[in-house]
Image 1 (cartoon, rainbow, N blue to C red):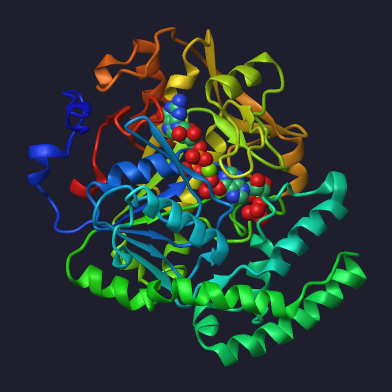
Image 2 (image 1 turned 135 degrees about the vertical axis):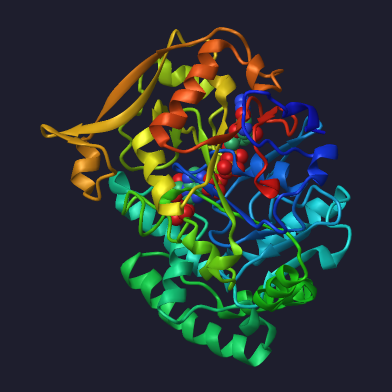
Length: 458
Ligand code: GDP
Ligand code: IMO
Ligand code: MG
């Protein structure tokens, strides 16, 4: 499929799918795919592509705030909770304990996939019994808080993600294992609903929710999802011991990480590589390669600082050419030049071993392409990502400029077939980011890929 996309004589140690894939230099590789920006980097496409080489694909954090787009044979699929390996036959998809799951949304997604012939057997999907449930009050609280915040809102997806993680940390969350035990579920829901209704009514001035309606709805989810619920930590351990290759699929991106991102304009989970271990129950020795996914420019949905944002015609061009509208909420994405300060930071905090550079095709037609290599703020130069909210808000990008190119890239499959200036751009990014670029994506389709190095075979 992408075997022809790859061989390129001027790159070192290239391993491909196809016959060359047999020449393996390591026994097993488990790979994490992590967003290196503010989300929507094209993780879904990259996970779908590398699923070819994996046996198990695992989500480890986030929830249905994620929207991962896969385009296979011209057909578009957007996944929110089911791992992006689902469009390949016979791959085991796992939702780990670190994910917060809205069971109604998950059931709809499973049903839609099954109607199209995917997830042909129930055994191809496994959900952690320790994953926490998103409850109707989480969504109500998320949306009401955003309304009350007005202009200062975070711009959340409104899916209840933050309040669900809050309850997990406050030790009043409800997990699948609790839902499976009817008595436990009744008790926990009773406690939660009393507290949430007081909060909704007195503080947020919202309508209260009915215990019985939630109890009944979640009772039906219990029966529909029962077959998928298991101890996924144990399952993954067995798979790894059996020599299976595991692909860990990140959601959101490093700059949205609750610890490392542009706090408070972040999501509520650890989106970085560290989240793989806590969100699945495997040890760090099982991770061999970390792929950071970055667009060739930058986008952001929701509020928060964005030093390289372009508000004029160049930003509009990126939005139009890149079709930059959210896969979950449909909101237009803010667009700007590549922020190498942010991506270099992502390389550091994730231990990224190779970058998948997506949407290079979108830069076609710009006379000049620019990259921020530092920030300027109150007379100071920042080469590293600042923690201060104030500094981030005032940061001005220090931009490097390079000549652009005019040729469309969507048919390119070999690095040497990219226009010279596009090649220069990629090479120069490798220098700025001090990391190799292992893949360049030139379109949404699975096959629109220039693969330089396959982490499963390196
Ligand atoms: P994710 O959340 O990281 O999986 O990314 P999204 O799916 O939310 O957004 C990425 C968008 O870019 C989707 O519409 C993809 O189909 C599309 N896409 C991915 N790679 C490329 C590429 O190389 N070129 C173009 N033009 N579109 C791409
Ligand atoms: P994928 O996996 C881009 C953003 C929201 C908001 C902030 C907090 O498709 O890359 P939340 O609902 O999580 O509490 O919102 O995080 N956000 C994303 N932005 N891609 C995503 O996921 C996102 N998930 C959340 O827009 O700014
Ligand atoms: Mg997305």
